[in-house]
Length: 107
Image 1 (cartoon, rainbow, N blue to C red):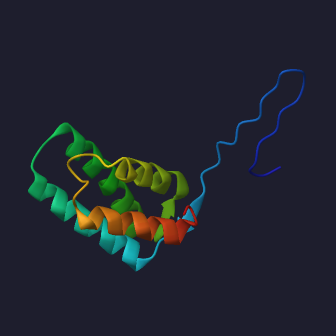
Image 2 (cartoon, rainbow, N blue to C red):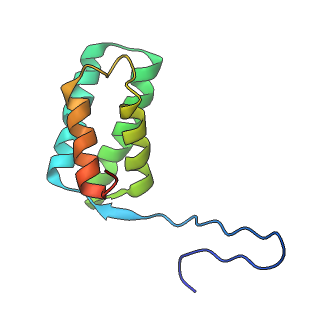
C-alpha cells in the first residue's frame, strides 16, 4: 500500500498523515510576496511575525519546487480569514485568500 490510512481491530482509528502538494501558480507566489512586503510596513509584532514566518515557508517552498503543501495553504487561509487586526485592512491579504481558494479548490 502506498499513501492513505489503514485501521484494524476494535476501536482502531485511521489517520492520514500524507502530505498533499499542489502546483502553485505564479500569481500565488506574487500574492505571497506582496503581502510579505506590506507586512513589513505594519511594523513588528507577534501577530505579524507569525504570519510572516508562514508566508516565508510558503514562498520558499513555491520558489524552490513550484509546489505548495495543501495544509500550508489551508492554515494561511484560515489565519487570513480570521481578520487579524494587523492584516485585516490589507487588500493583499484578500488577494492571497482569493488565490489560495482558486488554486486549491478550498473555496
